[in-house]
Length: 168
Image (tube, rainbow, N blue to C red; front, side, top):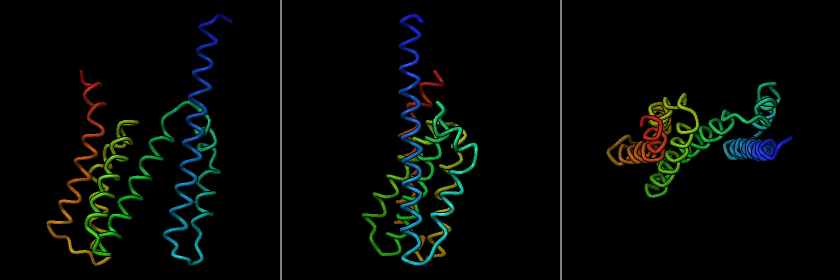
């Protein structure tokens, strides 16, 4: 093997280790959400996470150098932060809600930057948040709309370097 082959193998090992760490992070974030959202009740959330990761495609992606796990991790984190932002609205905590929606926007932007098939998230997550908020009794007033606009703005600012780089 040449020195070039050795360096290429080292980069591949690093990429696989990074991908595997994202898989572990995804497992932890989903387990955490299952526990948090169960509110102390008996829940099948942990079993659902186990079933999700027992799929052959997840085993394949967990150690391979693809960006699917990263997109899934960032999408799930965005959704979970949006759900927590709606909870903060319900608890009448607008500052926390705005911060959580901005964080959700950051993760949404990273998901879109990792894989362009995640672009529908920027439209779907605010819609889901509005529907969930309405069902939870949150007033869908201008303050809620401003919080959702912070989500969209932070997502667009986060993904814009990828879009600019790929369009130039």
